[in-house]
Image (tube, rainbow, N blue to C red; front, side, top):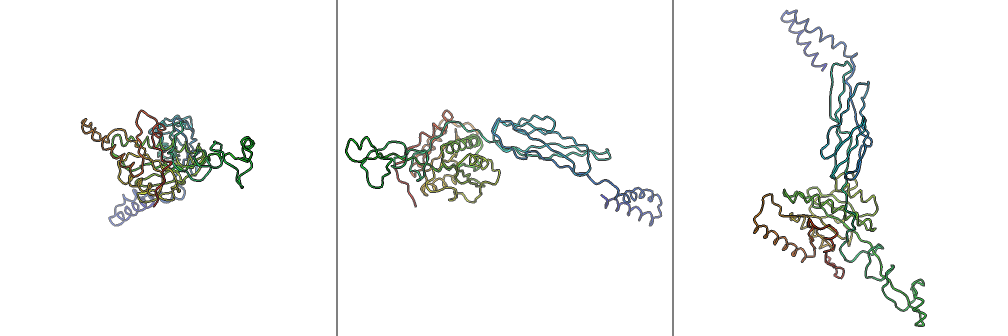
Length: 395
């Protein structure tokens, strides 16, 4: 601004001297006065705003509070803070506190409008500031979701197997051999038969569960609505696995693949949810169309939520099966992915094509179950065939 004033004053004085126009001196005098008083003028004011806490995590329909702090940088000035509406959220403000809640999961930015008055009281400036973020997690159904029955890694857990080892379920009684622990001796049977016998029990093992989410762009209509069920289904699977003591992880395959390795504990549950929302720095990113090997330990159970409309995602499921993983694809598409109403014959052909695809995927070892609207996820998962006696194919 000072450069502009100096340029105007210099041009006016030059024209006044060259053209002998003394009137322009009167025009340039106020400009020169402003330039001479630059050192005594009050500097421009700046305003900063933030929320405490800056990032809030909550579940759907849960109310959280944010304390909005907006303060001037430098000399004090009059400020007016007005919360702005947030799409998908309900907000209630009391002075400098915001109470927020959302009915749908997602990542929400919290904006406010700030109006500041100049020190001379002649000007008022306004700006929109983003003071915080609210990460709303999806709610999962409380029902425990079963996993496919298959061979599990040699790690103690809660899944009953047919193998003999440490456990509580009775398996058989056999004669004592050197090396058996004394606490396994069945004394009533040993007394009846005159020699030592031990009780064998079935061992309990833990599983590694990895959820795959199809994040490829979907066709409009039912395919777009399936993303909601995909996220809720993945949350329910991870919640059930962690509650059983299993390790759980997640992989999102799409245009920007991301993954989180399997782990246990409550903190892992929130890490998975952050990965779904693509926030934080707990997850890793990758390239390509296949699930990274580091995200899936040997023998992991893979449960994929997909519409089965993208060929690249289907090829990734086949690749996981070739690696030796147990792969289950949950079809979350309800109805044909077309916006216009279909003729009965075309609708029937569409259903026949989907059934044929189910059969083809099952032939190569990828079981596909349909998550219909009238059943819950745990009911759909109980339709998975039992492959516990079948050996995995490995390359």
